[in-house]
View 1 (cartoon, helix red, strand yellow):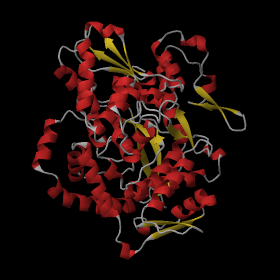
View 2 (cartoon, helix red, strand yellow):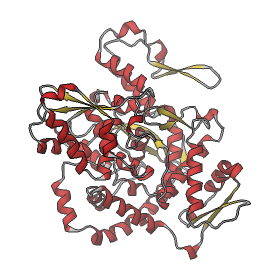
View 3 (cartoon, rainbow, N blue to C red):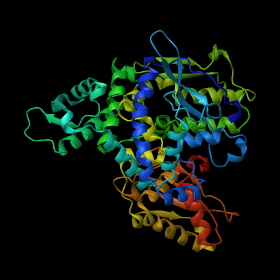
View 4 (tube, helix red, strand yellow):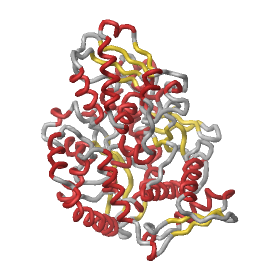
Length: 518
């Protein structure tokens, strides 16, 4: 399917004005400070550790470098090469104008960000070095850089005065009204009619309330896309909520940026593809399962089976709008009249994937990205992979290993190799907190545990579905396979604990969706 991913430009999208001079000016000043400090903060030991772990492909920039290799087939097992979100720019009398689109990862310049401007070789080298650090040190580096962005209190401050009953509208209006030169001033919150000085508590409450309401399904800007993980995706029909929906998304982007700047976290989770979009990490077919599991299952069947003609599909998609109107969208000119056959089904799947993963909500995503990167330079996020970005946004979950083990169903067929299960829990017990969170995300699709603990794990349809372990008959080495929709991990029957430990550590640092069979 990768061979069919041609450089096609999505025709829709929100156009907005943003000059390259402004973008470069903002990013260079930030990166200049980072580069000067890196000589002191990155030690030789870190560099040696990074070289020793060269198999770790975390940084999105490095990911694209791999995709641009002269022999891409040599990297097929390590990197899922797919679509990358990026900005297409064109010259205009008004300046540089851009819109979000998809391009094949192998056709993009590895040094180009999704904003459409290029990083220098020195900038790439610095970001690459930081991306190799363990997550705790990488996050400490990020927090230090965020602290450098915050302006001194004596230079000025932002004070938002909001009424609780109008907190959503008033907060969005005031956030969007902040001038770019003031965006990094210290932030203080005042609830009208309430006594209290904001020493951090009011700010945390404000972030919590806003994120809760903005990401709630009832508002209509986002929608829960996966009952199991409770992750939210952009509602492609958010204009039905309000005519100003794009302004809301830009405000949400600014809110996310300020949360990152202040070290605040959000309770709701953004679905995996949105995190990838924000980082410019390739979007692949398997990512669809985190947006719409049922459509993913249907498209997987079409891809793997013959006799598609009998389904009477066409090169179009139908959608139900809020007013119960059924709308047909052509994936190609005259698509509703073009039948899907076994001969052209891969082209159909390719076009439908592009539409589902970006085309139908490109304006909203672009507004969100614009707001975020008005506050946080995109380069600062590039040191994280999308799994780590979720931890940065949502915080590190507490994982009770005893509760995990107690609520795990172990297949009886492990009876002949009981040590494999014992080794599994010993390896997980040796993991750090963030490593356990990453493995949980690898195996269930979420780095967080339900309120009820592991007994509350559910499948993609919201039904209780406990974590389970099964053996991979006939395999004694290699990586485990996962079925994230069913919280199931299938383990090779390793001959010793060292081999299992090596395999489990490896999946923490690689594109984990490539191991999924969903």
